[in-house]
Image (cartoon, rainbow, N blue to C red; front, side):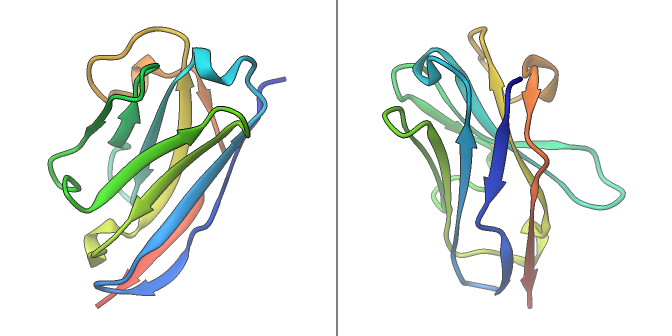
Amino acid sequence: QVQLVESGGGSVQAGGSLRLSCASSLYPFSAYYMGWFRQAPGKEREGVAAIDLDGTSMYAESVKGRFTVSQDNAKNFLYLQMNSLKPEASAMYYCAASLFRIFTIQSRDFAAWGQGTQVTVSS
C-alpha cells in the first residue's frame, strides 16, 4: 500500500519559515513525479510546487521565489521549504505522486496522496 506521510506543519507568524517533509513508501521513489498542494477551508485544492524526475521544479506564481521543492531519493523524502510566509498560505498541505510526466501542477494528474499537514500563518 502506497503511503505518503507529511510532517513539519505548524503555526508561524507572517514572514516566518517552515519546512514540510513527505516520507514515501513508493519504490523506486526516483521514478515518480512529486508535487505539493494546499487546500484552505472553502477553497479548491491548489497546486503549489512540483518536481520532475531530473530535478526540474515548477511553482505556482504565488509562491515563486519564496518556496523551494526538493527531494532526497536515497531517503525517499520530498521537501517543501517555505520562506516569507504570508497569512494566505494558511492551509492543509498535501504531497502527491504521479507515475506520469506532469506539465502543470494539477491535482487530477496525481494518483497517490498523503493525509496532509496543517500550516497556519498569523498576521
